[in-house]
Length: 209
Image (cartoon, rainbow, N blue to C red; front, side, top):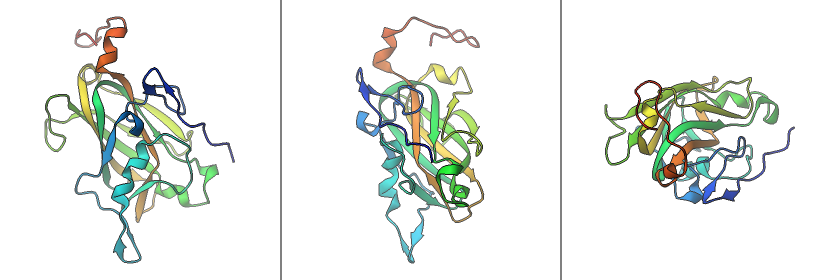
């Protein structure tokens, strides 16, 4: 079994991803918060609804990845809403789950497989309707590393400041009872950091990014 990744560290006012050294804007310790928007259904234990919705913030808390310490929702369809501490220019996302060799045989079936990420622009936009902007649709590979990073697929969507990120999980690796989410990170730059980098322009639309 491979060693767990080191815990996140603070640097220049930001927390960095365990895996790639990328700024993690969705860090709980930077002020981000996660919630469970309806109609996500939490799992049931011993016939009673488990208060797992209160554990959803575990997916944005930096630290060691420990097998069994995760957020679960019932079935294969579920969503997590992440409110960033401040508006940001988003460039990508990282989904982290124990690899097949790190968990007992068969338990990887609850790992998420396909998911779509949406954003709400700062100052407006509703994630529940057509005003939500789609960053892209992604597949977490069962043969890949525990931490897999995905870029924003639409260059022009990535030119706007966003305050919220909605992750819709659509399919897992075969477990029909529940899906387990361990860690989810959002990468990019907070608005107050944009002035510190050279100006760049979108290759598709010409807007400054």
